[in-house]
Length: 167
Image (cartoon, rainbow, N blue to C red):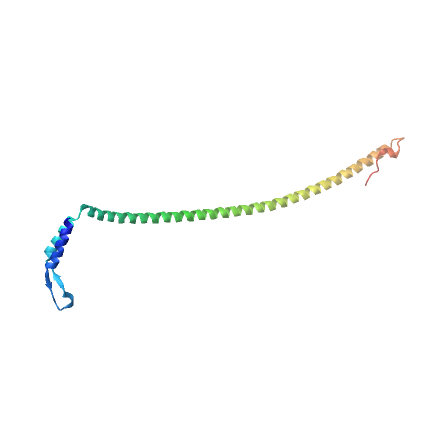
């Protein structure tokens, strides 16, 4: 494989480079390489990399982009779900308030209906009692008139006139 040969060449270049031995700390045990040779070798290495490696690099970039888009999409979906849940919660709360108000109205209506019913029954009882009193007085008047009329007929006994009147 070409890349392995180029790596070997880089290693040989480092071994054969000019060694500098200096007493100053930054340069102790360092090797000097020809920059042009080094850059030429790096360029050859890049060109010898298989096409699949460049595709893999592109795929890795695409993967990162797709993951980022997926995270953004996920965040949007979560936010939409939160908004929907909040809307549903507020709708549920409105429904509960409406149901509670409806129950209050029904209870008030039942109390009012009971009150009206009891007043109507009391009124009806008083009307029936007055009517009963009135009919009793009419019946008494009719009985008196009947007794008087029968008493004026000659030959009739008072026992034949009927039961005694209640006043």
